Length: 128
Length: 137
Image (tube, rainbow over all chains, first blue to last red; front, top):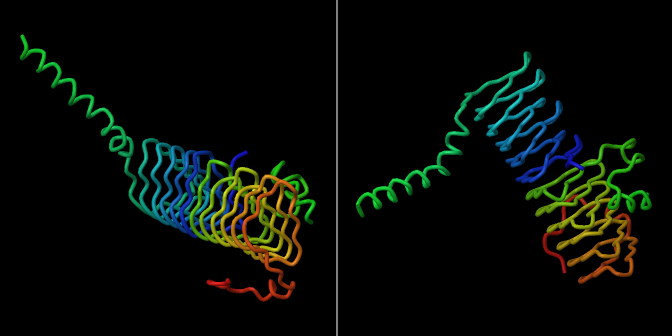
């Protein structure tokens, strides 16, 4: 059963989740999740991190997610960092859209591998 | 009301609870630090550090709360480290509670581990409880 922040719940602070989460209430603070669904009457003031963020409510802050879906009722004030973005007609967006989340995310991982291999090859060629 | 609350930790919000009010459920993979205020029922199977205010509050088995809880009904089947301010408190078997439990009526099921004091207070004490006593003996 997925976690539910009902519309009667207000959280002031940080929320971290390793499972899918449905937010219908109010959150003042950052949300870190995997799949995050923000319902029509929900309000989040802070940054929403996730793999997939579906927004139908209000976010005042920032979204950082691989996949972002803004439905027609969404109200987004702030930047959206994404790899894959869908905005439905009717959504309000005020902020920058940056499609570079994955680049900054994936770069640190391959880099060490790439820097290790040339050293090995040069060491091997130097041995010859 | 208590019987309804008792069912929650095992089955989650049942159909009866869903009809009356939406239940907030914090699953096992969720951690929250901060203040949680809910006008209704809150079930926690995850981890919460902070202050909680709810009408009915349940720590399900596996859940952990560190902080103060203010509610009308409190059911603890998980772990708590902190204070409880509630007229009706039920501590289930398997629960681990450390701290103070301010109550009017309380039940502790055999098998629960309670380490702390359980001061009794009249119901009126909870009605006028706007602000938590920050330091209390």
